[in-house]
Image 1 (tube, rainbow, N blue to C red):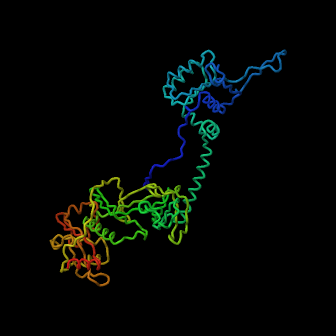
Image 2: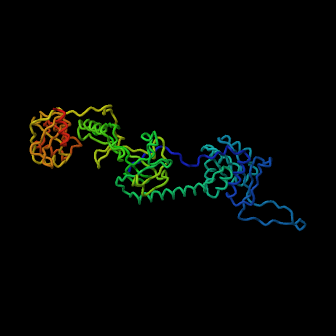
Image 3: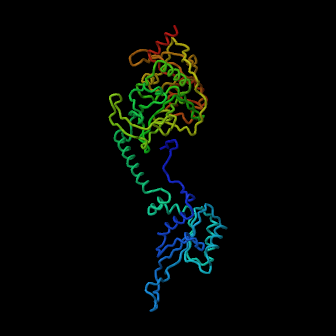
Amino acid sequence: MKRMPSKPTVTKTLGPLHFEDLDPHRFEDLIRELAYDFRDWISIEATGRSGSDDGFDIRAFERSGYSAPMAVESNEDKDAVHPMEGRVWMFQCKRERTVGPKKVQTIIEDGVSALEPPYGYVLAAPANFSKAAYDKFREELRSRGVMEFYLWGRADLEDMLHLPKNDRILFAFFGISLITRRKSRAAELRALISVKNRLQKLIGIHPNHDPVLLRDSKDILYPYEGEYDDFDSRPRWIEKPVVQMHPLGLIFEVGRYFAICDLEAKTWDYTDVINQARSSPDHADNQDECQLRQRIQAFVESFPRRQHATLVEHRIVRFEAIVAIDDEGDAEKEMPHIYVDFDAANGPFSGVQRSISFSQYHSESLEELKRISIFPAEFQEPSTRLIHDRKLSLQGSVGDGIRMGRSSDFTLYDCDGAMDFLQVGDVIALEGVNETNGEQLYIKIAHRRSENGTKIISRKSSSSMEIASIESQLGRTLSREDTVQILEFKRLKNWELRELEGSQR
């Protein structure tokens, strides 16, 4: 499944924490809070706030597994204070964003004595330490006999603060609560799942191009589109068919445009003057648009039929953008109504995907194709060169295919010059081939070209059915030396023939 592109959206993620906004003493308080669960302490002292910290900001005594009983002399006061037992840890806090190897060395030299080293040591700073800084940190502390040591950089501090147990600390120092955010996100997900399941039951996992009405949740004037001066350029409700239930939302077909695509040359173009995806009866073609459609069709038919294509445009309405769903609709629009916050530029949609379609079962991505200029700015009236009095004789199987409307048979092949008199725009009756109502069937030559047998046989897009059709009309096997005249045509409806006859009188 191809990914549906979408415009960038703002997401609620947690960015870098601004440690630099904390004053030095507040940063020390933060580290002390994080240190409480680091070991099983007997006590933790905020020595840095006293002003005489001997280079340390926090001193802590870790409870050891065994403490020797203290000897108490008989004449000692029962309330006398005894020395604290336990391993000594020292914490130094540097609220600096850059701490290199030399700075690390200076901090340790100034703070850690080789004669009376602590058991453990932690240096905390909101900096991104390099490998060289880590190496210098280990080297200096090992040389001083420190048994355990840790370097808490920016990434380590953020990881600790993101732990659920430290959510109260994160909130106290930065005003952020991830637990609250998770609860909010859980509620959003439950709402999204509810919308998805409801639409899945309403429309089905595999929608059948059934239309729905997309409505702007901010609109209060439905169904009176005349109340908006800019409704044509910025509609507040749109009727569109659902073509796919995507994991991210509903995919709608919003555009079908006449296109020409040459897969051999990997080129394509389209015209957007007619959108064939407009399904609403409110947008029924008027006479001018019908005539424009005929002119575009005539232009497309002047190219080889294998290059006739449709540019299909799909767009998505994401589940999270859906505000409300009206399953039943109303008397004006008896279909589901889906309320979305419309965007001024994109309406209810947030993504677009385009592809070239040759048939229901054959589509091509635009990624490997190059768009060139093919369609004109203005389309001319289709011309008819000549309506022949004579009839064209075809073999029975070919005539049967044309009468039954098999589009694969709407091509004539000739190698003997029997059809040289036919040119693009010519109209001619088919001998022995009648419409289903018994009237004479006429065809109009839309495109003519010549190809040699080698090209036809070697072309990747040539199917065995195409070659069989050529050989059936030639009455023999196609040879690589043959020069084949290829005439593609369309059937004329009776009213089209009468109009042509009237125009040539």
